[in-house]
Length: 443
Image (tube, rainbow, N blue to C red; front, side, top):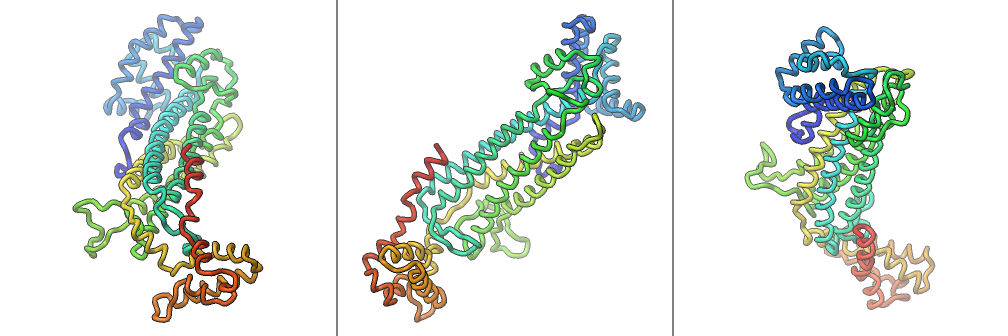
């Protein structure tokens, strides 16, 4: 966790204090369920809650140091925690953890942490979606050039560009909701998951209280395909983020300059060149996306554990749980802020769209000529001839517009007059279905 890329709300989920408080809640709930079932004295369950609750809530740096001190002897983190709690609870602490195994606590805790992290990430995605929708509606009919292979293709609108990103992030949100549901499971099933020493009703009680589902069959650990799906979802969200960031980076290039990140008063772009206005936010997001995607592979490799369990997954998850969620949380909020304040230049978009003399309307002319009687091959050759004549002489004294080169071509002129050509290349034809697309995306 790098403080520069950490928001306090997400960091708090992964703090030692929060982890130990969740551990206690799992232990206390299990004790209460056992007390209700008569497995342990109900009075002991009450004491565990009444004395242990304040002790867990008050865990601070000194308490963490004490737990670490105990662990330096026990070499076992859950036992160290239970020992620390017993120091404050007293004799009734012997009824904590009855019939349970460490993974019951650790895995259920991780489920709680991941669901809380998912809730923050879903809220982050909602902010991104709101920003994209607002800017898409603002620029629904702002003409701009669409590009394929980085080359001018046909006109589109800037609103449609953003609508496409909105639709992608809406899919990401749905995946995040599904990933949250998949990882939100509880296992209180004892060694190798057979419930040999703990009643399944304890698991049901704890799961309900924590807002989790019961794991249908655990092997002492919750199956790691659930976690792999969660981290792969984070990776897909990061890729959607990078696609949008890459678009902004391209649009901010000096040769393009159709949009740029907001440049704050007093901001400096370069230590050497005072004129620079660099796309630092989108470049930062591109890098952070790579980090988040990098955690998908170890999550996938965690799926194949030995027999009923080993702990090869544990060290991995201590890293990737906090780091992936903290990084993505920060990045999504940075992305939302960037899009909320993105500076957009419609006049430059229009200038770029027209900068090739009108050749971007070539397909419409091709179709009009085929409808006027030319073969597709003949029409394609004629339109390409006019386009290349326009392209190769752009900016030169003898250069002509695409329209003029078309009208000067005898094969074209024999099938289409100026009025027919103007009707074919009317820019509004490119935008006649924008409302239909917006209705599909934002319905």
